[in-house]
Every structure is written in structure tokens, then in C-alpha cells.
Length: 310
Image (tube, rainbow, N blue to C red; front, side, top):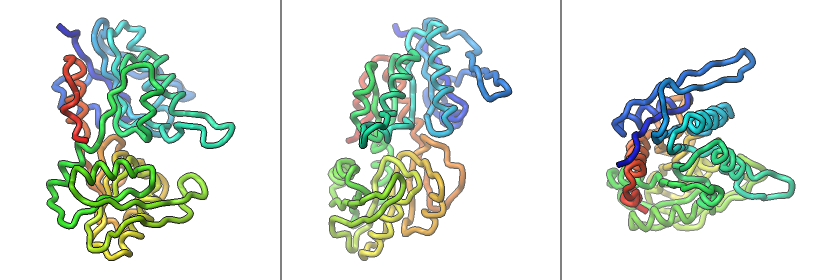
């Protein structure tokens, strides 16, 4: 017989934590938070977690207080004698710094992994890491979920003819290929060169997209510079339409403006990160049912494989 489970979440992920808890069938446990005048804060659980499995939900998007709050909650659960601490991070921030791409730089994805494990996490659950190998930065079990389980059924429901999948960069080629294989359609790849982070210097297209309904696939959309540049370039090649599916809607800087003025007919995202502004072009699909189902499977020691499509 398994121990009981309790679900907690950080303040910034409250909107998603409530939906996950509802789908799981358990209430979201209240957390008290004391704040000092200098900005320091101290969270505390309002009920005992001794001997239970604590699910702690919190995406680590900016500001960095979100990461710190998650670490403090993990430490609190460990010191309160929770038997198992499963950390649910729908969006794993800092993942873009997953290697040394030049001398004298950090590997932030590894540092954050070490912090989470040191704080006391016994298991991690996340979705669409920027690089799959980040799982290897952890010495605890990692359940790496894929948004394809959410996006592919939705794409199929649209009944789009002359469909073609495209990747906005070479790094997403494998993801695009997997989508195209499942949907039984062709693939196009955009090749880009950057001047610096978040700024594309030039881009070219590999593949014939003429008279196709193209869907760009990516793991995140930040400033939307790459995505909209790719969409506009594809639109110039005589396509019927251009859409995009992106798991994590960071949408920083001028992203919303770029999307509004781009050739994109629609941008489909999940709710791993809250969207602060409304747009008629953006459709949000919830990841809460998927996370809730996998959390149940983990808690009851059953297979999570049925939750993967590709």
C-alpha cells in the first residue's frame, strides 16, 4: 500500500497547480509565506507532510524568485520528513545553458539540477527539456514528458489537408521528423545563423513547401524572432497557411507584437508558463491532465509509458 500524496505549488504556478490538482482529484494544499521588507521570503506548509509523497509544482521562468521559492519548498518538505518529494517543473528554466559553447561560461542547467537534488528532491517530472541529455544531469529519476501527447491529437482534430511539418532551426529537426512520421507527411527545415542570443543574422529553408499547410514545431517561443522570421520566409514560398506549435510560451520583449504582424495564422502553446497578454492568434492547450495522470502513475507505481505518443 502506497503512502498518501499531497500537492503543493509555488505562487507563480498557482494557476496551473490548481488545474493539475483538480485533474488529480486531490485539493491543492495551502502554503503560508512570510515576507521580509528587503524581499526575502519564507514559505511554510500549513499541514503535516510526514511520511507522505509531496508533489511540489513550480515552473522556473523569470523572475528568479520562482526558482528560489521552489528550492525552499523542497527543503521544507525534506525537513518536515516527507517520505518522497516529487518536483513537478512543467517549464525547466535555465535549460538553454546546457553546455560550454565558449570558454569561461557556466552550465546553468547542470547547476540547477544540482540545486534541486541538494534541496531534497527524490524525483523530477518535467516537459520538453531544451535538450534531452539534461536528464543526465540528475542523479534522481526523471520523468521527461513530451507535449506531442497534447499537440498531435489537436493537430489531427483540425483535419488539415496538404500538411507539412517544419522546424524553425536545425536543433529541432528530430522533433519535426517525429511529428511528420506520426502524421504521415513531409518535413522542411530552416537553417539559421545568429549574431548573438535572441538575434537571427540570416535564415534559409530546406524543403519544398509550395501549396502546403505548414506547421512549425518548437520547444519554446521566447522573443519570437526565429519563429516569425521562419514563418514569414515560408509564407513567401507559396504556402496555403503557416501555423506553429510551441510548448513553452516565454513571449518576452516584443514577442507579442512580432506574432501579431507575422504570417502566422495561429500559435498553439501549452500553459507551462502563464501568458500575460491576450492575442487572437494564440491558442492555449492545458498540460494539466497529462501531468496529473503521470503523477497518479508515479504515486501508484504503475507504468507511465501509455502517456507517450512519440
